[in-house]
Image (cartoon, rainbow, N blue to C red; front, top):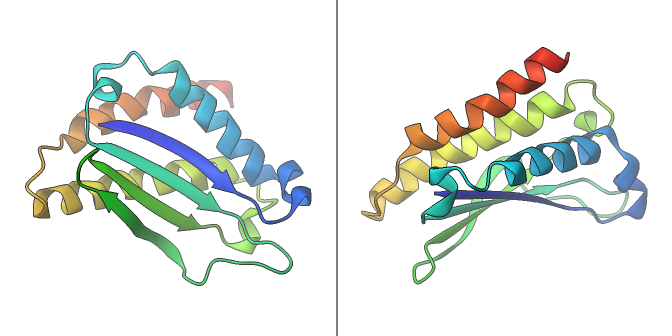
Length: 137
C-alpha cells in the first residue's frame, strides 16, 4: 500500500500555520521512505488534510472516505483539521494520528472490497518516522 498526504488550504495565510508545517514535514519523511516495500504496492491511500479558513471549512468532523477508484485502487480520505490545531504545539502528533486512523479505516474498507491490504506492514513502515521524531525532541 502506498501512502500519500497533502493539504487543502483555502487561505494563503494558513501556509505559515504550525499544522501546515507539520504536514509538510511528515510528507517529506514519508517521501524519504518511498523505497520501502509497502510504498511500492497498491492499493494506495491518499489523505488530504483540509485546513479551516476564515470563510471556508470542511462540512464534516474527523476523517472520511471521499472517493475510491476501483481501477487504480486508490482510496482518498479527507481529514477536517480542527481550528485549535492550526497553531498547536501538538500539530505533528495530530498529523500522525490522522495517518494511523486512515490506515485503520483503509484496512476495514479494503477488507469490505475484498482487496488485499496489509495494514500491519504499513504501520511498521510508519513506526520509524515516529521513532526518528521522538529522538529529535
